[in-house]
Length: 343
Ligand SMILES: [Zn+2]
Image (cartoon, rainbow, N blue to C red; front, side, top):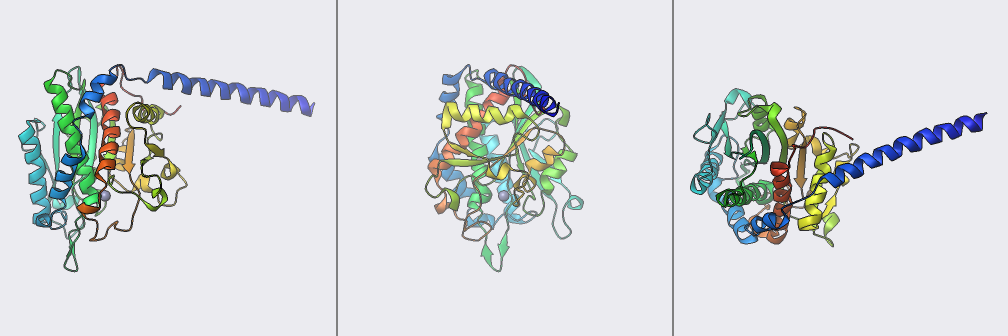
């Protein structure tokens, strides 16, 4: 009798396992790039030289380490805004100067008011559905007389967003603009506690319920100790927590276009570093939006004044930016929006 019961349980178990793996297979098969050569055309506009120019600018001494609320950070926000103006990428209608003011009350005690910088390209078919590409613009400022340049953290993310914005803009000019709207979001006050993204998600410019996904980039220009012998990698964190589909979209983007080693080490919920909770995507996740965090891991110059532009691996930054662009392309152009659902 006991044996029979055990067999029945095994049978039930294996049936449900099959059903689950079939669901996953079906989901994976549903994700494909119909327009691979079109995507490749715009991937070509993302290049190491331009990324280098942007990282060098953002991390230069004149911005004094970009401390939230200080002159240096306000200046870099002006630079970011001017970048979009020069490319003729629009500001949101409700915020025609590209700035969402983050009031002093929304920030820790001793900080001045600051701003998120927001630009967007309106979708051609589903303009009321939004994909965010986000990176924080602030850093540590000047500490003990030393400027914290933050080239990797987060000059690399800022540069990546710039290059993707340009690629989407060029595509739009060719008549290949995104079907969904893409929001380029440069949040403030990340280093002092994710305040800029918290303010944004509590005071969104576009309805949160129409947000399909948020891709957050924070440090993607360096190589950590674990990967010294295999630098073609990126940590992918959190994609499968709200949307199994997003997890596989990134894999499909990678296998079609970039072939990086997607490292899920820090995606484990048990990981003691808890990176999932430590950058701006987390505030979107709290609103049940499918998010992903792209990250290169920590290195010897992390939160040190020595995080400088000359140490960035620009070829790698290019490759990682291409992965994120290809992911965003799919999310913006797929026939149906990805589902916020775990399978
Ligand atoms: Zn950061």
